[in-house]
Image (cartoon, rainbow, N blue to C red):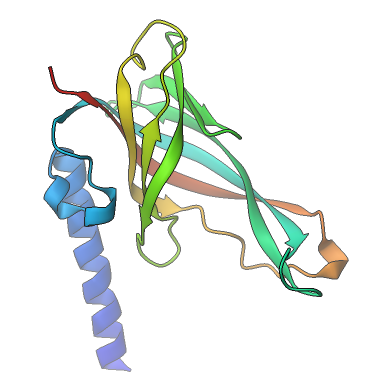
Length: 181
């Protein structure tokens, strides 16, 4: 029992250290799983911390008769800069990151990587061309790191609660990248 606790404690400390490294130096791509690293030739344009909620709905599994699961419906979060000032919002579907200057971007998920038990995964998204003039213009990739919470509810999902929605809280860093000049 002590070995399991030590291993869990050590894992938590390593994850925390990695999160601090990433938060302290968003350009430290080597500290992140390779699958979500931004390709060379891009520079960090905007760092945000998303604080909000994710909605899940209990639905029948499409490929398994009589089985049910919590399905991701969509996010709703405020995007703050590192000083805590709101600079935008994140919502969906489709996944949309919108700056307070009115510019916004959607994207296509390229990869995810585990972020530790109880946390939604890290993610790399390729941005579609932005709409509106402002800070989202030229964004090529959006990276989700330093995730906390946000996983599907532990509450049972069965025939009796099909259609029920549950909201879970989460936090994550959203890093916006542009092509280097």
